[in-house]
Length: 191
Image 1 (cartoon, rainbow, N blue to C red):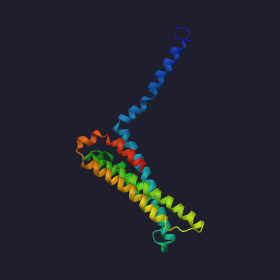
Image 2: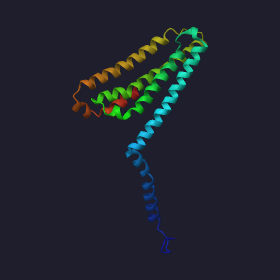
Image 3: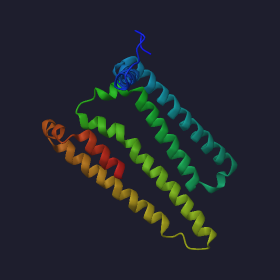
Image 4: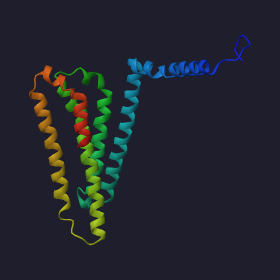
């Protein structure tokens, strides 16, 4: 029943519900437009990446103390790369505002996307690690695995360097017209 004692029609009830839902989604717009909230979220992300980086460093030290005679194994390199990738991402989130002010804009993209390349290498290394375990369990030769890993990474890095070199040589007006943000993120996600 309505305020006047009458029954609210179904279309009116739907409109009221839709209006309330629209207002319920405004909280994201408030957060999205608030520098304070953005800074808080960036600092939370920086702390989380910092924690992951610290854990990777502790794991690396632990493994090194347990078996120092093996040198740099695939597992140690994996933990080292995790330490570096997550540490750099943590720093990027801490200094996000300063990075966004850098000119030319392509420098921002290089700084923001370099951890993604290292992340690719880190998890390609994880695949290499498991492939080595699998091949060794089958008593098969692992001779071709590391060269394949290096080749795949070299190709990915070469494509990224070529793309960045191309974007860097364009005048700012031209590469802004390319919608560099979305194109670069797509190219980076493919690699």
